[in-house]
Image (cartoon, rainbow, N blue to C red; front, side, top):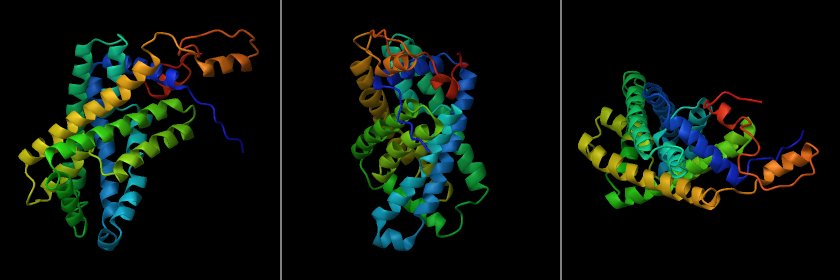
Length: 309
């Protein structure tokens, strides 16, 4: 059994992020919306698994950190399904389209439009799952699952202050966008899944706030008649601070930072591209753009473009 350590360089990855952002931002809006609906549903399934895993009164009382860590280990399958099927999560869009706009491959108004459509698509998908699958399916109606849903939502909405949720939102989407970044960096399916898994594990284990995950966690608690949570409270503390924090975490801390580091000067030396030249038997060594290696399978595997040889 051989282990392949080959991967795209950071400069190549952020170039692919820019191209993917341009492709996403120019996609037909109806396709963007339904892609976002799918992403909301898929992430909601992972939220349900996390809630089910956390439902353990003994662990909650005696080892709350351990059970949160265990729940965080299973949650990342949601983003794996989203990225590998090419669905659109608004939090990932904050990085993709920001880089494309900074690179002048996408107009700023299209970036904002993509954010708007993916946000509402994610919300529609999440609410569909909460109402139809979890709600009428009574997945969490019985005890102790109902109590865990309400207790978890109270920890997310009632206990923390507005600014605390905002700061947690920054940390969350910083890690989520790193997961998207690593998902592109890997060349094979196993590498992509491993790259996605650990940053998502990090944000869940730290208790950070993700605006799309909250679209499942909090409405589900409202559906189950959580006494301290209302729709108004959810909008004020579950959407506004989390969304603002996620935009800064994904757009600034991830997207703008890596654009500044690797794309702002113009051309960069692609070590991976040079290595491929050497493998091909070429002795010519020149500075090449980050895209010198060709499209390969990055955008094709994300459903963005057809793969070309």
